[in-house]
Length: 312
Ligand SMILES: C[S@@+](CC[C@H](N)C(=O)[O-])C[C@H]1O[C@@H](n2cnc3c(N)ncnc32)[C@H](O)[C@@H]1O
Image (cartoon, rainbow, N blue to C red; front, side, top):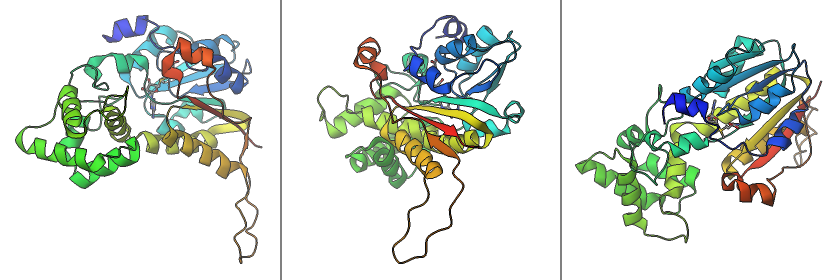
């Protein structure tokens, strides 16, 4: 898909849209950051709640998403747009005066998954890229060419919870001795030949593709930094709203909110630790999409929404 057609078409169905916007508790004159613009499904509703003095800061690490943001919102004086990772949101001058809400809708967008040329999908043969920002870092093909067997095993195991990580990594290393693995189809076929079809209804490469994507984009590292950056910029009463799509991400968000909202537990045999200043208050429990939303948009099925408020 070209950037232009991607920008023109509303190709991503926003997940838990009403819940996310409610959770941001938008004030008409507030300043909000959408760190994962995608195709603007959330941003569009958020900006409709802002008055003339409200501000909306938009980020995405994908240049195609940023092109879509510029096309739709570039002329709106209330909006600022930046190409980059939300991991670095604190480096953006526009955030320095403070934020009343930060939205992170993690993972990949439908245009990224559906554009075979991006290399995220094993459903279509394409160059094995998987970078959300193709202007930097190494592609999945480069990662597989340059990494040790132990590193490939670790990535497949940790980020894909792939039980056959060792066997797949060995097969990759053996194959690359003859020919580099440069296409999604080659990798998907190699994994299928190596481990067979073990999980009904699931392609054998599903876990490995997820793992490579997480590694190539340093998704978990970016999330850790982004949460810290958001906390540092949120004003008292400001809301942190995070939508995650797999358990590794959700665990990071859950632990972060817990660590910032509870006193460290007393250790047996040690004097009580001094009280720390709590910086967040959780708002409600973790939430999932309704069954109706999952029927309408199956890509929402694994979403978990967590919300917290910055304490004074
Ligand atoms: C699920 S989509 C967001 C969809 C968006 N809320 C919408 O409704 O259109 C995730 C987006 O976040 C972007 N993204 C993922 N990690 C990022 C990061 N660390 N920094 C900035 N953007 C990121 C991806 O490029 C993708 O466009």
